[in-house]
Amino acid sequence: MRKRIYQLCYVCFLTLVLPSCDGVSRAPIDRDKMTAILYDMNLAETWSTFSSGANMTQAKNTDSLAIYNITILKHHDVTLEEFQKSMEWYKMHTDEIDSIYVRLAKIYAKQQSAENNRRK
Image (cartoon, rainbow, N blue to C red; front, side, top):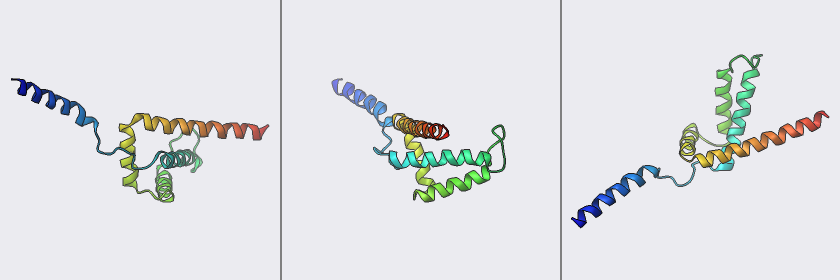
């Protein structure tokens, strides 16, 4: 009976622990590189909105955005598959992706401040 209880506890433990293990302890693309990629992609998305003379209410130019994103990944020496795997990893590690977005927000704030100072 005691052995059966231990086995049941062990099975329960594995059932709870194993799904949380994704087999990859580190991000396929490190935080610094991912920050740079996402920064460039954000700029590309903004640029694609205006690339065909579109205003803020119009949709972005998805054709040019696809080309921009391919170019960005090549520039950072990352394949689309590596990027997609990394995004999946970061989705499973929300604290890591959150830290990337905090870094991006700081970069944007710094650039906005510099632009505001330049206009004065």
